[in-house]
Image (tube, rainbow, N blue to C red; front, side):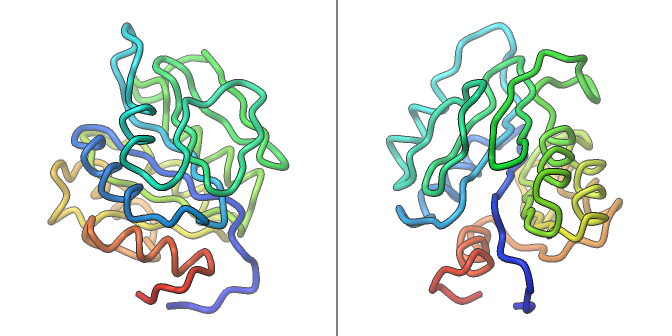
Length: 197
């Protein structure tokens, strides 16, 4: 565990293929009093409504909801980017939805989420890349790192799909690389919880 001068303000998570199972594993292990908001990009079918938020909400101690434009992110709540919308975080945890162009062929984009978190929170940003194909999240993780934030990645060797976590590991010095089952405990410990790594 490394000492930090700046407390974290937010956790941003990016996932793609295999992500629903990975998100269930992480979110169900976070305590109800998790001290910072969680914002999530999971690549979804852009042409259909999703029940992902309801599914995760039923199995998580956190409140889980689809993000809405104008929401202010609150501790103990996880916000999921709706299908075909980028999710951005502004000052004070203000959430914004955008239909701007796809990034790396996807909308929502983990890159854009991570970049917005880096700008809004600086060294108080904590981002996590889970299973997925492609390289979404790698450019955003570089921005987070350059602003003094922290990057956590699922261990590519144990990820269901290693593309995204491997791309992040190839592009930035990842602060923590962990098997999926260890990520929730790490997030709790990093944000000031009582569990140890």
